[in-house]
Image 1 (cartoon, rainbow, N blue to C red):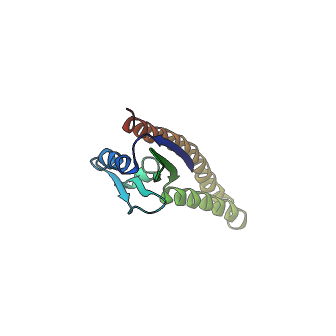
Image 2: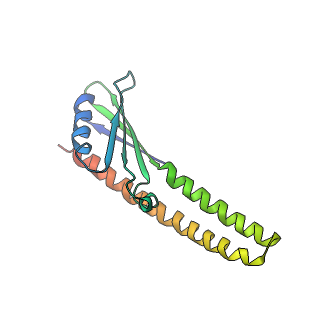
Image 3: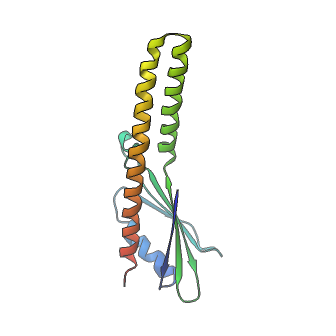
Length: 150
């Protein structure tokens, strides 16, 4: 999870319309917003999961944001989260590797081989997933910066 804030020189409605015009036409991107409240305008941006293998790398970011009104400008608060399926896959891989390694002591010592393979794959997936997360967070930040440049 990563938090980020942008101060924008326009009012909240114009900032929301800019974001809506930026993200709605993109194919494969889901842009949802809630009604205006006292706290501001809330929105979610995420990439749709179209293929199973894309869960591992390409669709692991959900952007939750809020546009807060101030006197003459607005503040956009963003939270970048990892997709729930991506987190669930990591947990499943680590639990399966622990299960195979634990069962190798009780049933057969050869069960340690799939456990170690799963453990190596899990560690690789964790490392590469973090790198993809940082890359895609920076891409989202660049899109937000370009949207609100004067």
